Image 1: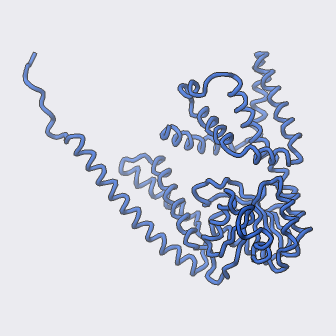
Image 2 (image 1 turned 180 degrees about the vertical axis):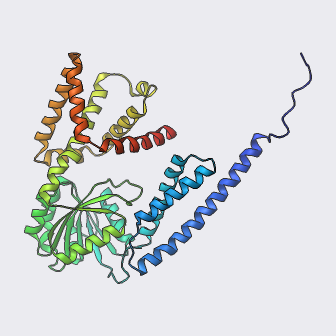
Image 3 (image 1 turned 30 degrees about the vertical axis):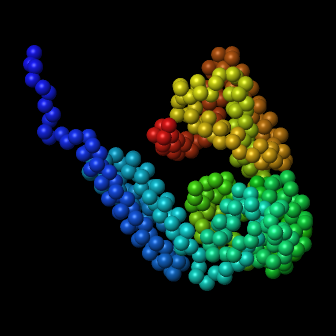
Length: 384
C-alpha cells in the first residue's frame, strides 16, 4: 500500500473558489433582472399611452415556449425553467400594475373614504386605491375623522368592517353619502349588505367581495366578485380601477354569490375545521406527524394551520351568516358517513363507486389538478 500523500486533482478548483464564481454569476443574473425591470417600466408607459391591457396571454405563451426550448437545448430542465419564467412574468405584470399601466391618463383622481380603514382588509383597500393615485381617508372607531364625516366628504365610500356589523354601519352612514358618490362594501356575504346600501343611501351602489386575504404579497391575478346595485357610471369606474391593479373581476347577483360561497367558503372552511379539530383530539403531537409528512399531508396541515391562525369571528360570521350552511354541511357529513361505512365494512365495491362518482364530477379538471398540484408539491418540498 502506497504511503505517498494524496494529491488534489489540479483540474478541480477548491470549493470556496467555485462558490465565489457561483455568487458572481448570481449577481450578474440580478443585474440582468434589474435591467429587465427597467424595460418593463417603459412597457408600462407605452401600454398606458396606447390603452393596452397589461396581460397579453399569447405573448406569454410565446415567451414560455421559447425559454423552454432554448433552455432544453442548453441542457436545462424545461419544467423548472417554465416555473422560473412564470414567476418573472408575474412580477412583470405586478410592476406594470403598480405603475398604473391600465389606468387611462384621463381618469380623474377621487377622494376615497375607507370605513374601517385600520383593519387588515381596510388597509389593503387603502393601499389599492392609493396606488392608483386617489386621495384616501381613513375612518375607524378611534380615528379623529368619524365615519359619518368621511362618508359625507368622499367621492367613494368603502365599507370594510366585520361582517356581523356591516349592515348596521351601512344604515348609519348610508344617508350621509352624497347622491353623486359611490357606496361599496368588501363583505364576504352580499345579499344583506347590498340591500342595505340600496335602501339607506341615494348614491350609486356596488357590492364587492375580494376572494383573497389582506396578507397576499400581490393583488396580481387575485379575484374580486362584483354585484352591481345602482349607477352604471360608477360601476364602470370600479371595473376600471380594480382591473388596473391586476385583479380578475367576476360579476354576478348577490343571491348567486352567496349560493356559490356556501361551497367556496363555507364547505372549505368547515372541512378544514373538522380536520383541525380531529388532529387536536386524536392526541398525536403535530411535531411527531411532521417527521413522517408526505407532501399532501403538509399541504393540508399548512392550510389548517393558516386557517386557525386567523380570526375565529370572521369564519364564524361567514358560516353562520350564509343561508345554505346547513344544507352544505349536512351533505359533508353524509358523504363522510358513506366513505367511513365503506372503509369499515371493507366494501371495495362501494368505495370504488364513491371514487367513480367524484371522479366523474371532476372530469377533465383532474388533469389540471395533477399538473398544478405537482407544481405546488415541488415548491413545498423545496422549502420544507
